[in-house]
Amino acid sequence: MMEQEELYDMIVVGAGPAGCTAAKFAADAGLNVLLLERMKLPREKSCSGFLIQKSVRFIEQHYGNMPENVFCKPENTSGFILTNEDGKEFRFESPGFNIWRGAFDKWLAEKAEDAGAVVADNSFVTNIAETESKYLNVFLNNGAVFKTKYAVICEGTVGNLKNKITAHQGYKNEKIITYQTFCRGSVRLDPKFFYAFLQAEFSEYDAWVNFKDDLIIFGVAVENAEKIQRYHQKFELFLKSEYGLSVLEIVKEEKWLMPKILPECRKDTVYGRILFAGEAAGFLNPMGEGISSAFITGKAAAYSVKTALEAENMPPARLKEIYEKEIEPEYNYMLRQWKLIGGMSARFFQQL
Ligand SMILES: Cc1cc2nc3c(=O)[nH]c(=O)nc-3n(C[C@H](O)[C@H](O)[C@H](O)COP(=O)(O)OP(=O)(O)OC[C@H]3O[C@@H](n4cnc5c(N)ncnc54)[C@H](O)[C@@H]3O)c2cc1C
Image (cartoon, rainbow, N blue to C red; front, side, top):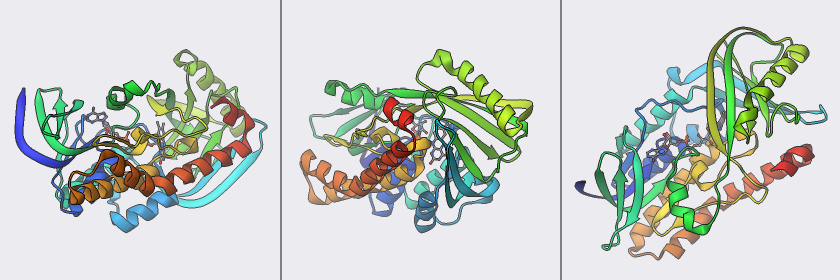
């Protein structure tokens, strides 16, 4: 076991939007921060890459202008169009950006590094445990152990630390499987919009279409992995008959996970001196939009740790209070979003 000498104020696990933002804000505030990412950066993350206006505003205010390589075409998006189980269309027009997640998240990590955080990719965290000296030990799969006063887990849906840490609570962190194909071809849909379809025959959750450069991407979300191909084929047939989809070539297939959000929207915030942010905290908006919440909860986690460090020996219950107060508006926003979708699709809301 490789013991590292340095004691960090805060170690962040996961260099997605939540982790990079937590690391950046904490480093900006003068904290000694280590950001650990299990993959080599830039890493792939299955995502439609739609930045809604709320995300764009956060980026403009806190990160500045994005570099060219982050964008894909069409760079400017117009919103999303939802079709419910009865075929009724709801249109939400709101300007946003279309980005590649690999390049985008790498840029966010560079911003955290510019602020003074140490960023270590290829660093897989296997566990986090309290020590007798009231610090946390952060264990890596290569045998290294880092010491920190606080840890912020931003592992997204794919991580397993949350399961380990919250196991005693008896909760099951349920997940949904997403499957999407990237195709060359044509379809009679506007590339500036994200399209969501809630008809039960296409998915157990939602089915969608979006566009990146010259690629048409369409996918489905299911709970039962065995049903993925069947739903995807039905959805493809529907797109062919309703919107003239013509697939010339399938360039890529992608499977991923999403948290299964239930109507009460359970959140996980603070366990001792470990905080959760982003999807790991349970934040995801309907239609799978999660980047804006990742930003807001990551920033709130950094603020809460900074406040706890200033107070010295702050009881965990007080830290939880501070963090939950910070993220309350975002949590209420998420509840409102799920209610809004519930009003548009009884089927979608009932099955959650
Ligand atoms: C198919 C699909 C489409 C989506 N489309 C959109 C969209 O268009 N717009 C939008 O806003 N949201 C979208 N989302 C949701 C969005 O991707 C997530 O909500 C967002 O990425 C959450 O950010 P995060 O920082 O919490 O986690 P992530 O972005 O998932 O980052 C977690 C990071 O932690 C790392 N990690 C995990 N475990 C460990 C470990 N043990 N040690 C070290 N590192 C670890 C992972 O490698 C990863 O880099 C989509 C999701 C899916 C699946």
